[in-house]
Amino acid sequence: MNFRRFPVTTAVLLAISFNVTLQAQDATRLRQANNITKEQRIDNWLNSQDKNADGKIAGDEATGLMNSNFTRNDTNKDNFLDRKELGDLAERLARGGFGRNRQPRDQQTMTTEQLLKQLPEGVTVVPDIDFVKALREAGAKDVTYMRYKDGSGHGTFFANIKETGPAREKFFERTLKGRHSKYVFTIRNGKTFLNDKSILVKGLRCSNALVSDESAAELIANLDTFASFGINTVSVFFMGSRFGDMKGYNRDGSLNPVYTARMGRIIEAADERGMVVLVGCLYWGNSKAKWEEWKQAEANAAIANTVRWLKEHDYRNVFVDVDNEGMAKRAKGFDNRLLVVAGKKVDPTCVIATNFKGPAPPEADLGLHFSAKVPGKPYIESEGTPTHQRAGRLLGQLQQEERLLQLHQHRPLQRRNEGQAESPHSRAPRQRLGIYVCFDLAAVPAAVGSEQLPRRRRLEAIARHPMVARIHPRQVRTVLAPSTHVRNRTVISKL
Image (cartoon, one colour):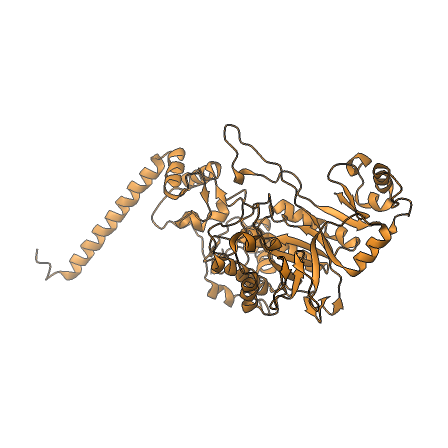
């Protein structure tokens, strides 16, 4: 046959032949996929992506579709996919089958541009990893996902446009409707302000509140109780303190969206109550959440990305601690002044503090904890452990000095899998993590707060007092547990 005389016929034959070949490849791939066992599939994934051979795939090890769907498959939110989670994934894939570019039946998606055209008037888009969860909570049966290009929440958005009714309304209400911070924390003339009112910062250090959704929810649930005793600030860290081990930052310094979602809920809940959140960034020391390979550039990126995230979500009832106690400065030599500068380049209005031994640099708005007090620059004791003093002296101190009591730092219970050695990453927050109430004894009768009473009798009197009973209805022996402390005429009771 002379193909030069039949070019159209030749093209058709080639196209048919190519299509038949693709169909045959798909059929072969489907047979192979269906013949492979779940354990073989898990082993294949681990062999190709478990770079450090610890039997799990970390968030920074995952590639391709495993990386794109990592958050969805990481059901316990520990930033690892273990054999159980990989097994669940393998079972879902086995039920769904495989095919070239296979799409769910009747599923339609739209781009960000198409979505913007459908927005109601006055509504703006705020990328939020919670949108899938919100849709599902509202009854959505088939939800697609947001594909992140980095940890800051930017990416290509896909939405199931067939969802209607409460699910769609929930989506627009929670995820797309623009929000504005009701309260703004600022520094003016060496003093701290919330909106236009001078504020004395008094609060609780809840550094591991992001360790789980339950822990974040527990903190939020107790904010009203805290506020009723004059607490106006809580501190929460992206990089877990001591035993939290939360990798709030990815290897490149971008934010982990799992933890930004929790932090966002806490900040918004605090804003509704007129409270402030100290957003902690780097936490070195004993924390296993740190990246030992980080240089100054990655540390700068972490601070810049944190400030950018706060700015994009209009979270202004906040201030930032770049480096807890200067731990990263001591261990890695990070210049804290450059960390502040990196944040200020993103948002000059963001209130940023340093926390190392020495005066805060000129670029910082205030000093915290380890910082030397500088005339004209506010200082907040963000990790106070008061010494024993009489009640009258304490009351005067609380009226003059801004202070956060250190809490939320005790070790979570560890879960040990049978037949397996415990990994640092297998710790599970099965114990409630440090939700406390703090109040001074100014309203307690003088005899109760008297130094003359033995410590146990003092505790028993405190336990019987109506103020304690209102927030702690349990028996006296609970109040006398080791987790209860009486310091500086201040009571800290575990809820």
